[in-house]
Image (cartoon, rainbow, N blue to C red):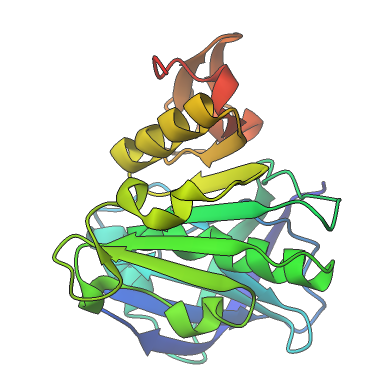
Length: 257
Ligand code: FES
């Protein structure tokens, strides 16, 4: 897939729960093809302490309006600058990067998409693409409390939504792996979120004999396989998550399942 460097125009910035913002970006020309699970590397201008681009998951691609959506967690100088952009500003992005999730092809496949925190971002686009192909996924979304949940009403457009919160303020109390929906049979699981959550999901999938892919959020700099700062040890040796991932089948990972 051809990578492009584009100056995208900020159409809107919506403040969401806590430190999260949703940026909708557009371009005069049609945006390139992007797959669910791929990411963009964003250049942070006017931030003296931020030299490297920031990797951000593709949250959604609205083809009708030629928009790319990025869900940004403002946790450092770089991401705070990105979240503070205003409509009309420009954001320089390299895209699309990485491999993306395996899309199910059989309409009878029962697919569970498990996300935690800002890790829910790529699952919205994945669910939307699946629904377009006639496959309705089950989303299992976890957060600390109800106020930390992101885009739940958007997820409801594309499939069944199950929720866990650690304090029980919405959905079932506990972690995603405690949710009763895991008592149902699934053929495929895709997960993205904090590593301990993904490892727990991977253990569940491994024991249940379900195919599972995880989107890794290793530290990244170049995003192009050049700096080696995103290396992950796998059954096939060290790989660059930015190039050969970020989505990996759990069978490849040394997570001591
Ligand atoms: Fe540089 Fe992956 S981020 S090699």
